[in-house]
Image 1 (tube, rainbow, N blue to C red):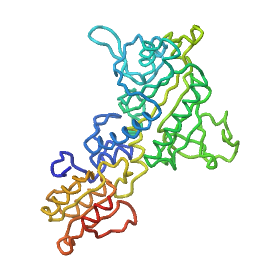
Image 2: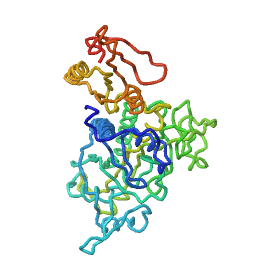
Image 3: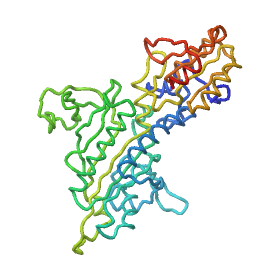
Image 4: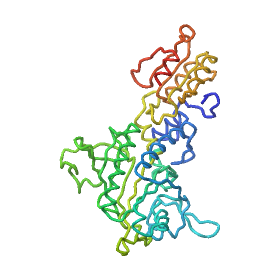
Length: 408
């Protein structure tokens, strides 16, 4: 992408009407734009990052048998009444159509996916299966002040699984748990993300959250460093020791919830009267699980964690571009380098703008691509480009284009 053609501009100062750091820096760097509290537009750079997160999630969930669908965001009132959540789901957006019927904007999709699955389940031979979507969700948050961490409109991956027994659910639950570990590893978050025991609410005694440690987190967790698990502060009275090894010396840390998984049991299958016929011809209850992951929330979390005083530091797997190419009055040669790199499948943001070098370096640090490649006087004298990895104490290398191609 050529930066001269980009309609978005960076900003020197943080927006005055935004309190959260993740939103401030993402807006300054031209990744998102704020429409209202908890409502953001994903601009070209931001959408590239979001799509890369989505694709990592999609790849890992597909590996554990997830089948991708896309369910409606507009939900009829009657499906929410089936589970008694029309009146009790506090964050539900409710509206009335011209047909005088009432609707909700999808905050979660158990009420939609369960009757959908019912249409295709006849016997035990049709089970188990798991279906998921990556879709926009809507929640009427009272505290939409944390940028992408707590939005009124946000992107979520929600996976739902259907089973013949609790044992079958338990086995798949562990499989999905391992898939989540892999996702956080690929996102560069595995060292600071903990499987966290939390209240199961109406579904079970405990559920599991995935909490990423950062001082900017909204939650408090108690970590067992030995077992790499944690307990949410909200249930610490019930579970004051490590649930794995029993240790009592847990360490309190601030964290952001970046995923959660629940064993739903038969709550929703019973509400929609969804059953299956077993090998003996008897009708049995279907057991369900659900598994949530917020790609837009994770993007905000990564912005909170991976940055310095100059700007963002994107992990390579989700960076908008691998290389930020800066031309310092060498546009003809820079164009050749740009074309050569892109022809090799390397993602390049090419700063071909007629601006002072200082402004280009400022923007490159703010945007935070993993590598900065500069074509300046050294190229004229020695045919070498200046390559520097984004980050503190990174050393600059002088390399020929052929050497750079070998490196990437």
